[in-house]
Length: 340
Image (cartoon, rainbow, N blue to C red; front, side, top):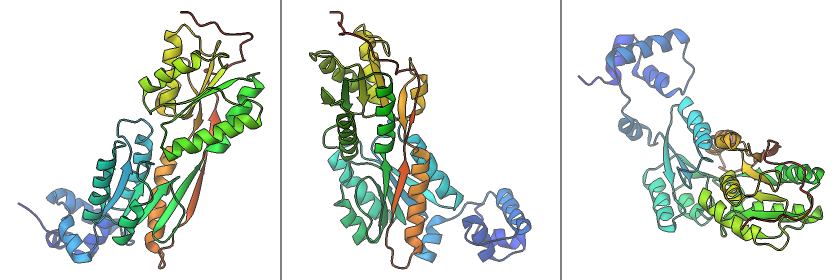
């Protein structure tokens, strides 16, 4: 038998409005009343009719979360932070990923509008700011990461990569490193470009102008192929800075296959501090990006936007910091001869 909210209210001895408030966590309800309602909900195996609620209130229970690639280990903590905040407030999350594909990206934006989400967190650089126009026209509050400036219905979360990068450069400089290489993220990716620029300018300021500078997709095998260019350099660097932990771990694997020891011959530094970074051998020195906090901040920013009468967005900043592990050590002396 399918039960209605009125059935739950009748058995719990409360009004349907009280049942709605308990289930949607929209008002304060005493612990005793909440327990009585939830006990009846459990006994009757009652499920909210979200379609009926949407018709009654004119609002959906959905928030959108857009990422680049569900297989990228950067994103699970972002998803967890965002989803936990949404669920704690009685909302659901529509998770979409672009797979770095322009056609799919356009479909993702359409899906957000068609689903009438209350707000959308765009946690990928593969959607450019032109998407804001479509979402803005639909009056959908949007928060981006490292993409644009705050505006009406738009907030932005800036991840301060430079802080952690400066710490990493000081760390390797203290170990005697003077020659650095960079394997940046994919060309055309705004976040990758920002990280590469911070690395190049920071190293140059420290008298360690990087050479060579190459690029890689966010995949293990792509990081590995970039190593070939570095090992072919006339003066092989003593440390490699990588645009992500995935690139760094691919680089370490390729160095090992080439007979190069990490960190004795070449030190390696990553960015992100994904869960696998500590499991790498050697464990990876990396720049921590607080990704679960990023997810929480994204939802908080959307909540704030929806509460403000003028719907004017804000800028948020998240700090990064260096995590020192075993993939960095004192710089080698002399030239490195790579086995053929």
